[in-house]
Image 1 (cartoon, rainbow, N blue to C red):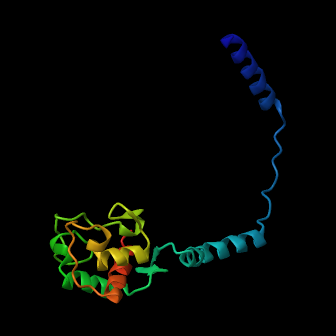
Image 2: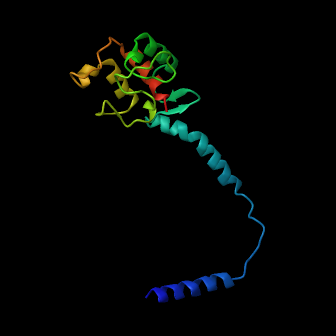
Length: 157
């Protein structure tokens, strides 16, 4: 059986190699298709941002309500780095809680909430309400501050 398969492969290969080669000039690029591709490349982040997906672009989080720069300052002010390692925040090298690098790519927050800007802000604002008895304390963070912190965390890709 193996010999038959090898023989058929050899015959097919011979037929392919015997075909005449048609060398022609490359076709002209389709300028309309190229223009649409470029347009789609620039429109994709806006489309994804409108769908609720967060993307890091030039240091800001698209589609995430809040001020990422203010969020970074608040992370430092609230001492989040005493428990978490947070890239971009001086002194944030804690090991009690999980490191917060890559928060913009994570699927879940606290292992149970889908990682959306609003869910992350809710977790930051009221962690004990989401998972009673967990080690993250309620810090008295306002909704606006929680959104700012979430905006910063979503820039961490």
